[in-house]
Length: 222
Image 1 (cartoon, one colour):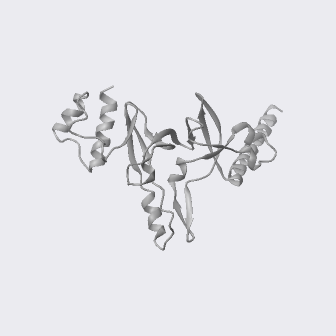
Image 2: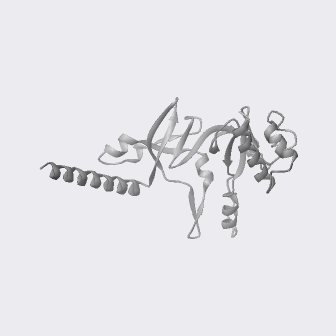
């Protein structure tokens, strides 16, 4: 009898998991969480990050930088029916950040200095955090142009390439741009990195050398 009860319970759990995965698929959501007032609130986020143009699907990572639609875990998993008004919209100024599957996004105030235009005015947005330390590193994506032309697919591919942004002493700047990291001057407080710079030990592109130096700085110069 005990074995039968265990088998029934296991079967019920397996069925419940299948039902949950089907609900996740049907409602077009992913597992995630929001960071609000120092708390982590688990739940589900409406799927985003892709766009369709002329029957082809393209990555649209700039979508993660704006508003998200979130529903708490207990509401999603216990409600008999999921309605659109159960999802709450969160803007970058509403929460400290969010987790979308295994990606972490932080709410920051940032001015896009990658190109001249209105985006150079600082505004609150979510940026994907890829390194969190004394020097943190983020991905920023510029939105594609709103003017649709025959080459719009190429514009989508171009816009999906990240700009690397770093934060040190509270300031957010492009790593490899005007006002970014100066490999010859910015490591005075880290003899380990400065010595490697002086000996030309960092290799690769300008960006790659700066990322290597940041990782060494975080590891050896806390």
